[in-house]
Length: 340
Ligand code: NAD
Ligand code: WQD
Image (cartoon, rainbow, N blue to C red):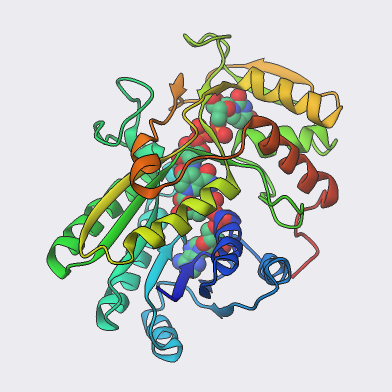
């Protein structure tokens, strides 16, 4: 494997993955339409890695333009497919937009891959496919039962890829991410939501004085302190899982492999806020609110399979996750806003 095409490479997880790919000696081609990103992280990741990527501003739904990218780039050995819309609440309100972008966009990509004889793909799936799990830590063979349109797009994409792998002899890796957080150690790239949907960017903005308080969505769950427990994973560890997946696909003939990507350790909302207070030295006001509809009490990964078969394991703990998030937040309080 030499040349990797990364869809959504200007986004949060994609930009961190491109650095790790470049650092591991791969050539990187990015396709992104800036639906939820800007060019700035691409410039910064090139600077951090000391190498260039080949960038194409293309929407996956524009099949002709996408095909032209594949033709222009020559032999692409594998695709890492990040590009998708990802806000659960928005997907409930606008399911058609989610199905169109995430399913139709992916189908266009896979048709172009087929037409250009590219047979390896790593796909960004999510712990959300497990819905409300019967037991935690969750193993990959647990029932898949997504509970919202965003989650349905992920489980549908998994099925589409399994069927395609079977029919066309593709090598497919489905990575089910748990809760990605944190930023590059340089503080130069990170997560950049204008209005955060997820806990950690919200807490980070409260610590920075951008928002007044964080609402804790329920403190009456059956967990260590009543607040929701999740398996947070450092985005750089997650990025490295993609490099390991590309290595795993090298010489892997055909079939679908599925891996949970998490640390295996869960932290509650209260524990997250308290660690953020310690790391930042800032006051972080919390207000206890009602449960958020659709939330579950606890979700942690059994990542034994990824440890064994990918040779991957998480290197960073909670302290590093929050330190890096705070470094990025303090260095760039407005994220990439203002940058193009
Ligand atoms: P992100 O929004 O930061 O990155 C996605 C990128 O894809 C953006 O740069 C966006 O502009 C691009 N994109 C979207 N639709 C496109 C299209 N039709 N054509 C071209 N580009 C398009 O999101 P992220 O957090 O980096 O997530 C990456 C992937 O990981 C997504 O598939 C997401 O569903 C999945 N995932 C994310 C999380 C999380 O909490 N961040 C958890 C599990 C899975
Ligand atoms: C974490 C915990 C909340 C915000 C979501 C998606 C999932 C995946 C990752 C993409 C929960 C609590 C949150 C706040 C809070 N994304 N919380 N106050 O819901 O585990 O997962 O992102 O694939 O699909 O569902 O992540 O960060 O939103 O919430 O109390 O302001 O923090 O209730 O317990 P979640 P999250």
